[in-house]
Length: 83
Image (cartoon, rainbow, N blue to C red; front, side):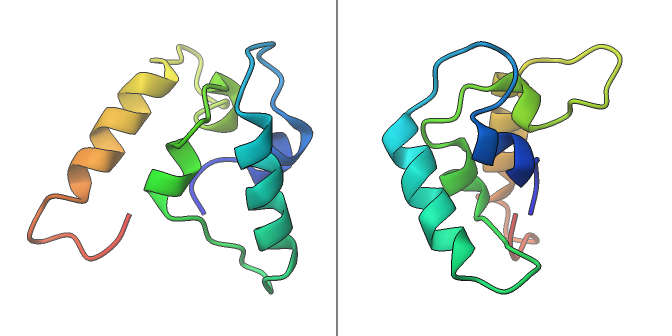
C-alpha cells in the first residue's frame, strides 16, 4: 500500500476535510483483507485530500496533488503493471 492506512483510518492529521463516506467504505473493505492491505492508487486518492496520508516523512511536503499526479500518470505507462 502506498500511504498510511493508519492515518487514513483515523481521518488524517492535516485538519483538512476528506470524503468520510469513501474513507469509511475503504476501511470496511480493508478490514476484511489479510495483511498486507493493498489499495489501488486511484482508490487511495479518490476523495483523499489529507496531505498527511502520504509522504508525511518528508521535510518539505510537495502536496498531495503532486503525489496524485505522478502516481496516477504511472497508470498510463505501458511499462508499468500496477501502482
